[in-house]
Image (cartoon, rainbow, N blue to C red):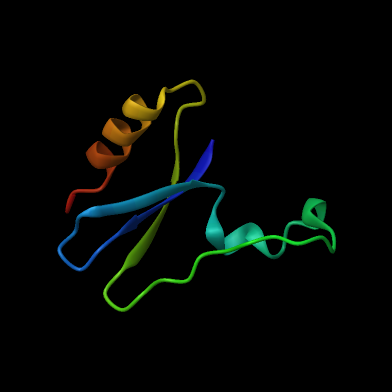
Length: 71
């Protein structure tokens, strides 16, 4: 599953969203309907990852933290 993890200035995990943010607006399946995207605040970084498909919320968070060295 494609996810984007967002970290703050100190490397702390801020959020995890499904999809790679860099691909969101180019995906033709979104058509012309409403959709949202994220914009980094100053000091925040996006990390695009591919996570295993069947993880609980807690498992996904732990997996993300293990993939980003600064978290």
